[in-house]
Length: 537
Image 1: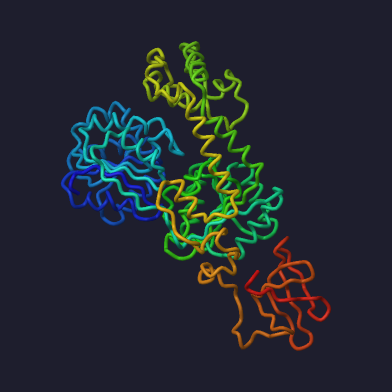
Image 2: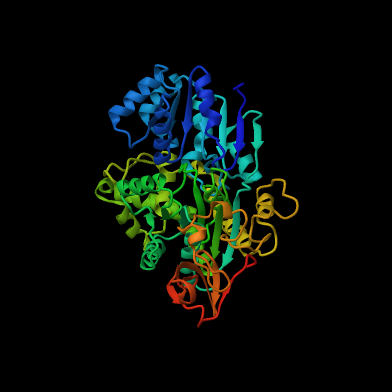
């Protein structure tokens, strides 16, 4: 409010948006908001407009006539907030008016995208310091949920913030139970995930790195009677929006998703976030589990650590970090096509460069860098791509030419692996150490290394465990040692939960759902050895 630059790191769901939305209402002029995702931008603008706040977004998904209207409103001082992606600063139409916009403050969301050390680096974000100068260096707030000291310093330096107020509120979310479970076979994942879904109840997210694995998980869960939604990049915009809307309005939908899902999903009652495969960085994991329990109620966050999954993320690191020689090869291929480039598409370029795997993102990243530094413009999709000037290596950041970012990404994956594999140190202590924050003292009581309780028994989860339908206690028949619906029992070597008590007197039978294969079996307590599992399980 006083005009000082601010760098704010605060947990997902802690209300960072209010830091710029409230001043937008109180100050003269407009807050220009830089946001990374169009879907996220739309959700925020819709929510603000629903509250009667003058907000608008300008991006390529907005029809040209609507974009023109919003920019005229901004120039006339009729908007409190204008949302744009960083790519908008490369638009000729935007450049003509940017200096005349009544910008009182600049807000940069997901600011870790600026830093080469950030887990979600984007080339256009790296030029925001230049774009900020072009609009007169307005007082700026840069915000992110996860930033190490190195990332925070890089953000401040890249944006050229003046004596910024540094606010690091920590990443502590005491209502989240944090855990990692090592699995030795991929086949162990489905029963574990199904058990968690049934034990905890409520809405939840299950993350996986590969679309193929998501679809297989969806099929397996369906086979054993567990309903779920699926969200990934191969779905159409309409399908993704439908899945998100169903999840947002439901109390107990489960969505299986890649990391494309979640940013900006402001659903307060997500009761669990599970990771079926290891994420690439601790920052990404922290951000994703932070989507649980925004209502302050207990929620369960667990990573299934299968060592072979590391190879998936290692491939992603390689595919996200093209060498300088590879980038030059992309440029020379396009330049060599000459005017024929407008008859080509992205697949032609991939074939020319011998890219066989669809997950290999090197070509797209090289195109983005060439576009950002002004070597090419246009798009393959509408056959408007063309070379505008020769490539000068001096225009590229040093880390692109040196390959340094690949090494940093591999080190980040190593940190994630060490976090998952450790079985002794408090999870919150490990996270605080990683982010350069003050570590908690003693046992946190809400991570698997500080307590070995499962979610159905842990005191933090018990108040929010989805209640199973049960008759009034007076009507529930008791047998032998007082078995009732909801009891956890051991039948021989099998472990499961009583889901129904049938019969009365000496003809009572238990319907037990096995925790191993989730099948329901009828058990006669008079013939089978059935013992109740106490709270110490």
